[in-house]
Length: 423
Ligand code: MTE
Image 1 (cartoon, helix red, strand yellow):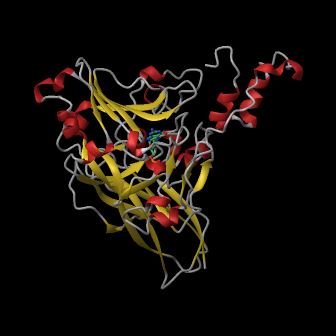
Image 2: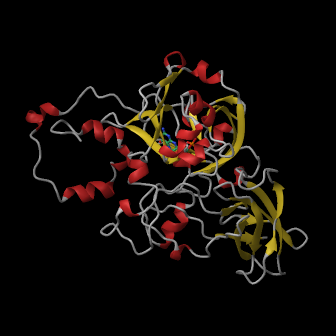
């Protein structure tokens, strides 16, 4: 990509790769060293592309600083049905763009039509205001558990790379209608592409796409959101406008939205074609063929224990301890049951739902927060707790990570297990 020019700007943007592991790989390609007096090409006045990032809450634990990727400690997730904005996980591939409201423009294009609709933020706010409460989850949530089975490439997320929020904005469906997409034309197209304002060193934007039915169906509930939990959308979460695609993997919920294209093809972006896809446990980096796997859209059912956290010491009261956590399924499936075991799966206790949205499948977009009292046999001082959830299609979680391992560490939905010390 440097095409004969200095590579320094790339190292600054992709600083996540500037680590001993990558430098070690590059070492075998070293052909020599520059004499400092010939070092004319090095860009000396380079500014840090991450210099203008927002301030973040101290509870967000970074999985990487530049770009910024962080999650809150698991215990805090179950305190609120709606995750507070400042502790909602952040997943950025590139620097946060600095967008001015006055000049913000959202383009809407329908392939084959010459007219492009251009909307300012004020124009978007003139559309009827819709709210949807939806969980957004990263495909790599819980990757650290899969990584323990066999190393995978990706950010080492714990179990908090998700959050639940009320998103408010215009309906994508209504905006597409305003752009001239009529009911009888829909079948000509297969995808809705999103392009964003965050760009890489070559100027190419973050992008993704969703199947067209999701955006045009009245029940798809796709929102072009400018508010999150009743507040202006924060910069880290896509200010001023992001797509919220309920039930669909975080990667397609495109932030800092610049353009929408109704198209016959999927987005050709790296993140749609060469990332966020699942593979067999036997596929390795020599055999992987990204063109052979579909891009992830709806996520499978998952659950996790958030309180107590792994390795915590817990007080036993009246012969019991209480576990709390979340469960969620993609595609608008509702969680119908959460099973918890503390004897290795010999007996299962059905958890109580503390927060459960009233919306029915296939429009159940929020997580379920649950709690469960577990009996502790006298004299026990250590215990493993296991959880699995069941959704309204009666899909449940796989038992072991070994059988769902994949080289990028996505779709990490095996039973969640934690160990606790008891006193
Ligand atoms: N949109 C843009 N423009 N750039 C990004 O890096 N990251 C995606 C998605 N939308 C991303 C994006 C990914 S991978 C996820 S998981 C979600 O945003 C995270 O949303 P959040 O940071 O608001 O939690």
